[in-house]
Image (cartoon, rainbow, N blue to C red; front, top):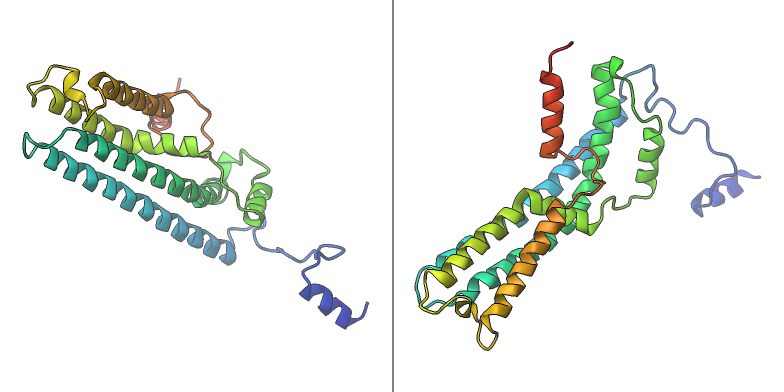
Length: 246
């Protein structure tokens, strides 16, 4: 094959017949510390993770501001309808869906950072701990070649409900119950009526929606968000460290 043919083959994007054995040489050898290229890669992943983390925080801020505005308006006058709190809950639910989608993207970068921290930096700081997953390089290389979302939308919603939105929904629910019981002369559940929709139906919809949120947030599941900082894991890890040696 002539040099011109080789150049033409490279420009067309076709796969070479045999892989170049020098590609990746010295990137991260077992007998050396992290190379400069890997350090820059890690710094880039940290930047991406931080960017998406900030996007999550902005969505949470919008949800909190909306809830505060709705609560203030609903209790500022007895003439204001109670269903504005339900509208506020629907708005917060919209922010929950948006934040769950952003969390799925955030998890892509976070999982890569955690893989590098677990298999490179942790082992470099303490070589005696060893590596639990011998295939981590192949998995990380595959993730860089074909990036993919690693968690489902339902799991992402569960994460955000546990961290932020379930307490917000609880506050709105308590405020709504207070508004339709203590700030009206009508009997319960007629006081929860919205226009021609009877109160019992409105109450049923609210109970089902809140119950669904509880089920999504609290049901047992296998979490696919690798090395996510969950309270249960931190407590178990702390307890094992504090336990004296026998």
